Length: 477
Image (cartoon, rainbow, N blue to C red; front, side):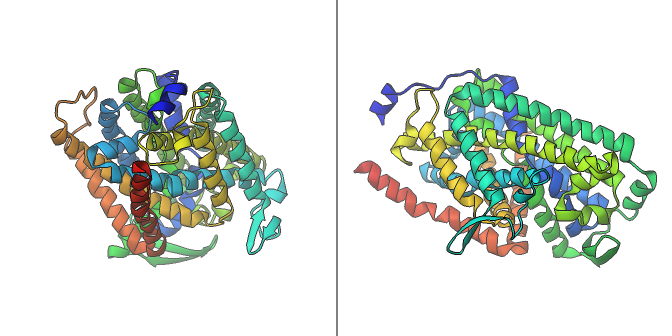
């Protein structure tokens, strides 16, 4: 590996604070904010708890992001969270994260976002609707839909684009993130100005903190009170959607080798990006509540809350406005995910814990082989058809590792007290400790509420243990 790194190009530090912020915000905003409020509302049954879920998710996200600022300043290296876990604990912990990242966290998110792009393209090309009649071809019992095929084409295209160098990926990220931010701000403003109705707002906020499970449909709602531990489980299940929608904020830490002044700019990018997205998410949900009754949010057709809201705001053309917005949003989101993710595998390979070729940069100074390996796994997950299950697994595993990483701040302050810290975790030790507690409660509640796929996520992590020792043996050989 030492010989390899001498003969391959080095990362080019060409990304500034704006690029870092665009990668954070652009990677976070995919399709979730347009959809998952439907599930949250059906689980909690009230305006107060809907906003609470988004607020607590935003608080957790910003808390973790400002805590990561300390780690990014200490270790401004490609690989980000993988490096932090390795330094705080040991190489095995770092590997388990990197393996989970490759197996489900990053690749599963890329797949789900790619399919979301195709599903909303279905408004213009009905063949892309994810329905049993729209099957492109079958291989045995595996049926590949046109939407999944479109998602694969999108992922392959963006992977190819990013193999041409960091500049191409940077400009795609800038352009599409700016467009999606302006579009979301526009939707929120027009929602309040054109679609808001006082009687709807007043009705939604009547008895706003009485948690209920909603079933049935629009105009035929069955409401069941939710109490005690079931309430915590309902919040956790709802938060699996909001956390998935807010995930990938840490992607900027993976590209530290390509950031200008990474000790300063990564921490600032994390804070600014997560703050912007949290404000957008909370105000978007307040707009939904001002435009539609709770049952219309909970039972929006195919959970497309933003489409239902846009129909109220703009009329029938609103459906197509939202479809275009989501296609722009998911395109930019996947570009950020693909761009950043391959840097983790590169760092693992440099440590001798991943395929050797993943640790090589191509002539454009990017980890081309790692990009294509990530592409292959994401494309396989595209045809799994288990997107809701992936959401639970990704949320559980990602938050588990976020908690471990934030705990690593406490460990590193004792292990490496003399290492330079351009940033220090905000409100340490209180805010990081609160985040860890909330993350543990979330993971425990998710196991209770969604045991099958939460445990399956944990099994994927544990499968990394024999793979780690296999990699060590190959490294020694």
